[in-house]
Amino acid sequence: MADQAVVFAYHDVGVRCLRVLLDAGVRVPLVVTHRDDPAEKIWFGSVAQLARSRGVEVLEDPTLEQLAETVRRIAPEFIFSFYYRRMLPAELLALARRGAFNMHGSLLPKYRGRAPVNWAILKGERETGATLHEMTAKPDAGRIVDQQAVPIGPDDTALEVFGRVTDAAEVVLKRSLKKLLAGTADFKAQDLSRGSYFGGRKPEGGRIDWSKSAREIHDLVRAVAPPYPGAFSGNLKIFRTRLEPGRTPRRADPGPYRDGNAWFARCGDGKVLRLLEVEGEP
Image (cartoon, rainbow, N blue to C red; front, side, top):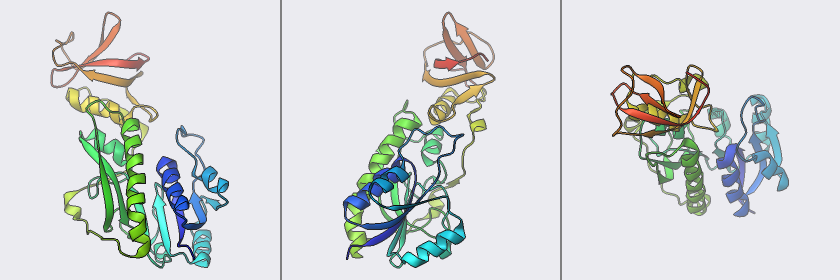
C-alpha cells in the first residue's frame, strides 16, 4: 500500500509540492486549502483546482473541530504543509503517525514566520531559499530535513525571487521524499539564535521614509513591488527604482522630484534613486 499523507497547501509552492507527492504515488485522501480572498490579487496557481483534477477531496477553510475529526478518521502517516497560511495546532500534528513536515520559503533558521521572501529582500539579503522541516508547536522551529539556496540579485523583485524559491521547494521535496517515506532521512536541529521571527506584512508597510538610505529604499521598493501592494509616498506609487550613485540630487532635502520627464529622489544619505515606474503624484 502506498504511503498516505494529508496535505495543507496554498499558492504556487502548494501547487508544485502537491504535484510532486501525487506524481510520486503518495496517496493523498485530503487536501486542505483556502478560499481565495476577493480583496487579494490572485496571481498564483490553485491548489484546489489541481487536487480536484486528480480526484482528491478538498476542504476550504474548515473549522478546527471539523478538521481534527476528518484527519483523525483518515489517520494519515504524514501531514505536509506547503504555504498553508494558518498554524496547525500540536494536537492536529500529533495525528500524523510518522511525522508532520512544512516547506518554508527561507534558509531556516533565518526569516522564520510570515512573508519570508519579502523580508529577506527588505533586509538586503543576497540569498534565500526553501527549507523542508519538521512541524512543532513553535512556528518554523522543527528539525531541518533539507534546504536549497537561491540567489537574490541587487535589483530582483519579490516576484522574481519567489519564482526561484518555488523552484527550490520542488527540488528539495523531490530530493528528500524517498528517504522521508522510507524513514531514513537525516534531521538537523535548528539553532534558533542564528535567526529571527518576522510577522506578516500589510500595505502600510510600503510607505517610504525618505530619510533612509538609497539602498534601503530601493530594497523596500523591490520587496513590495507588484503583484504585492507596492511602495508609496503620499499619492505617488513607486513600482521600480534604480540606484544612480554618480548623479547629483536636484533638491536639498530628501524626497522625490522631477528632472525633465524623469522622476528621481534624494534619499537620506544624499544619494539619488531614479524612479523608473511610478503612478500618481507625491
